[in-house]
Amino acid sequence: MNKELQVYAKVLGIGSASGLFLKGNLLYVIGDNSAYLYEYNIKSKTLNKIELLKGLKVLENIPKVEKPDFEVLCNFKNTLYVLGSGSTPNRNLLIIYHLITKQVVQQDLSSLYAKVKSSCNIDDDNLNIEGAIFDGLNWFLFNRGNGNAKKNGVLKVYGNDLTKASKIEFSSIVLLKTNQKLVSFTDAILHKNQIYFIAAAEDTKSTYHDGEILGSYIGSLNASTLNLNFIKQISPNQKFEGISFFKESTTNLEFLVCEDRDTEILDTVIYKLVL
Image 1 (tube, rainbow, N blue to C red):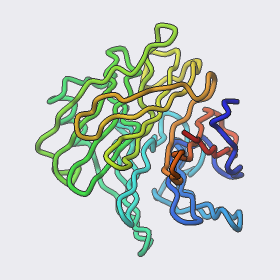
Image 2 (image 1 turned 30 degrees about the vertical axis):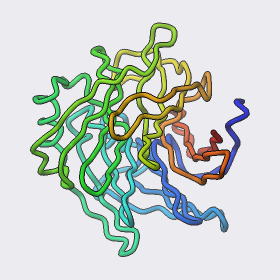
Image 3 (image 1 turned 60 degrees about the horizontal axis):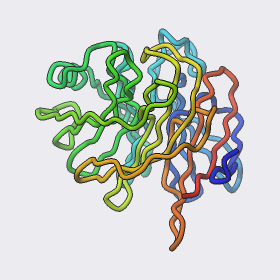
């Protein structure tokens, strides 16, 4: 394994991890085939499951055709935002979870995703939101370019309410090609006016069907210009799909990342990534 990656925690009960956020001793994790937000206490090693969706027959390992595809776990102050990828009509949900009150609010992003498609020339087969940043004023959504049109880039949604978006801009961003396959976004966070992202290459031209994993990468963009600062491989055979800030020293930046293994096994490994 890359010397920059270290095992941070092993968590039984979570599968297909696709997003994470660390607050104190609590690690919040989502899975793309689950209706739960997972709250893992690092000190006590206990797992709490927060139900985000009601009325489903199963809440974990939801069949692919039915799953809400929660690919995004975004934080702003004391609120978590969980977004569906938009890659099919039943993947258009936004779940807002208030960390203090424990309140769960559900919203529909169908109108936003329809506006994205019409105004940014992204069709049904190429919309696949995998990361989001909210700075309190505007949103930045990261579209993974693993569809046939390779629409990898950042959608800037003006305003603080995703359901009422009136202005949307798409910036196409070419990260890297490996084995003739595009490296495309899987998550992103904001830290000191820099966007740190993770990305992956996969042998597929579909936002729906998985392919052979060709590696994962970390990099950064300037938050103001969206210019690419750097990108480097962190694993040749793993698909990392979630990133959270961990800590910073005078010499290192440290993040936590989680891996989507595309299996039904309910256990996951959280890694510490040191730059």
